[in-house]
View 1: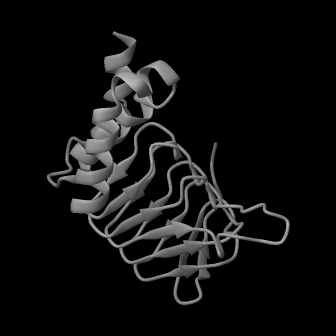
View 2: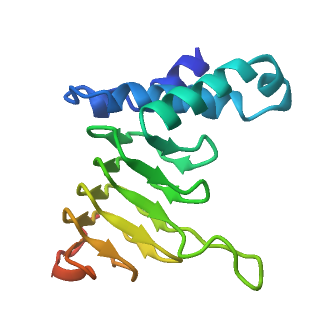
Length: 173
């Protein structure tokens, strides 16, 4: 029963989502579950192959099962999405189409590549680029078409190229 709960952890957040994004999230959670253990990887390699070919290649959603994403994840209009496997995304976040979340470069002199860390309840607009070793705080809204290359504090609204903080809302806990 815990397996079903894990796979459907984003269901409540996606009830109003009429797009294919809610189904992609379920496929992602299943792939994530399978990839946890070597034995399940061997037994269900066909599913991981299906995920790679169908979701990543045919549907153009590069959402690697190694990516750490909290519960309540929403993917609106799932197409043209690229999220680096080392990215960490908090709970109750929503991402829209044509968004890239990644690193500035794949190889550095030190060999260490840092992907963005995104807090809880972040709303990311379509056609947004979030790139580099940055932190996006919780309860942040990022406007459509933004290019985020610097960290954004909790409760902010940011937009533009490069993204600037338009408004800072204090976070009430």
